[in-house]
Length: 126
Image (cartoon, rainbow, N blue to C red; front, side, top):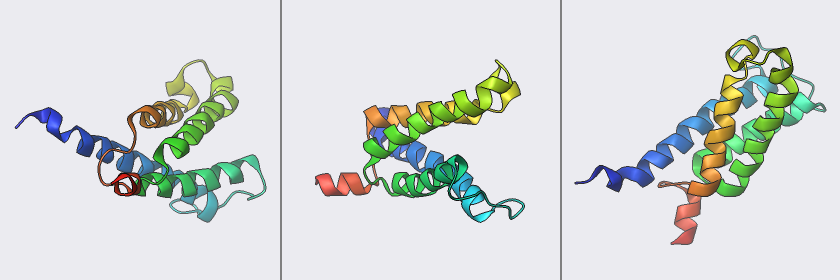
């Protein structure tokens, strides 16, 4: 058995795990969990980010409209990096933006690669 035969499943694992981590950022902003219990103002840029992280995370976990959602979230992470992190320092490790960069490029990859196995998109295509 060739390792390439597992490419769709590996892509699905990348999508699901990335989306779970991303969803956690949304729940932290919207519901204060996990964390201190503090939430953001829902009618703010951070509130919008929380909604996109929460709803987009769920959509990516199940693989629904993967390419469209991944495109939106990739752009959101690029904007987040340049608006919030980059002004603090040139170096991502110092400005706290390394997660934003990783999410941006993982989601950008999903735009081109699709959802992989175990997705609503895949079931709908069959």
